Length: 164
Image 1 (cartoon, rainbow, N blue to C red):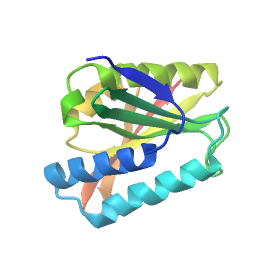
Image 2: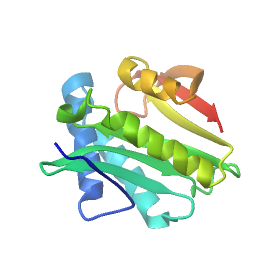
Image 3: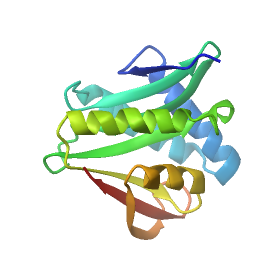
Image 4: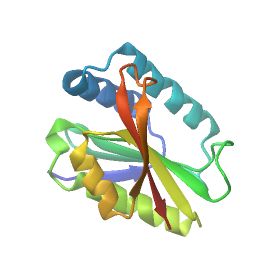
């Protein structure tokens, strides 16, 4: 399998990312329409303000289609200067365990460094252990955990941060 990693929006990217999140989290965690709509709305807002100097939408694909995604958002006006938000990190079932997540994280960390960011954060929830190990391998540390219901179900939301 030949894997191609691209950076930036491409036709169908939003649908691929939202669909992958909706299917995975519904099947494995019981998330529903509220979560999928949350991902779609937040991603649409990101694409509207996308700044190629501050943001990246990393996508991995093969001849069979979508494999994985990961986004660096540095243009959110609510962020402090030189801080970015990593989100929408997801791998299709066929891509899990292939190293594609590590490749995307490596590309993201390279971009954060070259763009001059000092820190990056992400939010996830307790129980996504393979993702947590990937984040920790790239310097992210758990800084807080609290119950949260904005995902459409109650989860123990976790915030991870990395100093760059």
